[in-house]
Amino acid sequence: MQARVLAFVLAGGKGTRLYPLTKERAKPAVPFGGRYRIVDFVLSNLVNSEIYSIYVLVQFKSQSLLQHLRDGWEFSGVLKSQFVIPVPAQMRSEGEAWYRGTADAIYQNVNLIEQSNPHLVVIFGADHIYRMNIRAMIEYHADKRAEVTVAAYPVPKELASEFGVIETDEEGRIIGFHEKKADAPTMPGDPTRVLASMGNYVFSTNTLLRELYADAKNDRSVHDFGRDILPSLVGRSAMYAYDFQTNRILGDPADQQAYWRDVGTIEAYYDANLDLKTVSPSLNLYNRNWPLRTAGYEDPPAKFVFDEDGRRGEAIDSIVCGGSILSGGVVRNSIIGRGVKVHTGAVVEDSVIFDNCDIGRKSKIRRAILDKNVRVPEGATIGYDLEKDRLQHHVTETGIVVVEGFRSTVEISKMTL
Image (tube, rainbow, N blue to C red; front, side, top):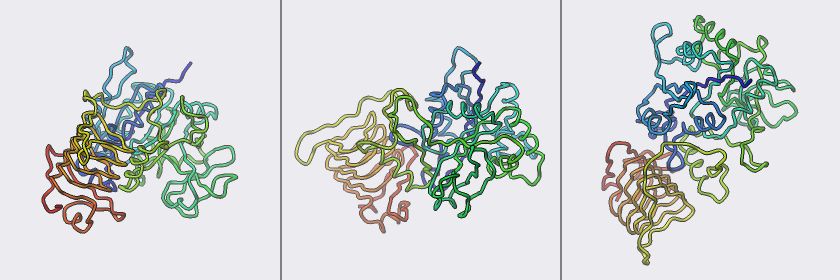
């Protein structure tokens, strides 16, 4: 008999390091790859893994995320166990507070677990870009007769101070947690790498409920899985690390490496986006056996018009999404979202352009991220004079210009001319 699995997706993150892209939206709602949102990756992984009972826990600036879930993920199957439902903080903890930590977020919804009575509860974050066959992790959990299984990703030991590191024995049993310590223990048999926690968990239901109730009564706890509950289980419960690098996706080549990216900074987010337009990207969006699902927009096809010297609509080494029109403009090495217009003589290079932007005639954009609804006036430049750009836009240390948008129409002033 296949185990009954209930999923919780933690989608309330602020994503402060992605500011200003998170100024008006939660991190899971940030666009990625032109037509997707970051949350689409974890939800697609769950559905592709035949896990259909999913609660999405929302909190900070959730309106954009809620609209996306409504447009792309609300479905009602034949069975009552098929759903994707957003859940705000229920104020069930002492003091009727918002979610105080990852463990408290689950505790405030403990009634949903008790009502569903699943064999297993999977708890996954919505902040990362990755593809994962979650059933393989569940099978590992069962084979080990584990009470808790934590997904882990090997990283060079030099990066140990940036991650929560899991210490294991040779059998994969977890014997310690080390939070962002440069001298964290390396993997058994591999002195060059450490196991970084991905923040994705499989719990046997009875163990999870027991620990949630105990943690809620602990005044010294910050009510977080990584800092409180999991370290307290070391030596008390059968807890194992699942090596994400062993995970395989149906339809991928046998030698395809598992993909996981923490896009927590503008630089990491920008690099992960632009990797998609390469000939052989690390993240395969074209595997029909493991589709990346999102909202089903009724967009017309992308269009490229004019075939005249100096007025040719074309895109090279780029992704162009539905409804966009390159009307005599040129796009190189870029990601173009839905409904974008690039007018005559405009040049967009090495950039990520969100939905519904309008790139004016003879304007030039390079190494930039334009949020949705930005209108670039004729002849404007972005990314060519960073000192001028800093007067109006956010510019990272590496020179990526982020232009705020999001409202119905955002005009760039003539200051950038």
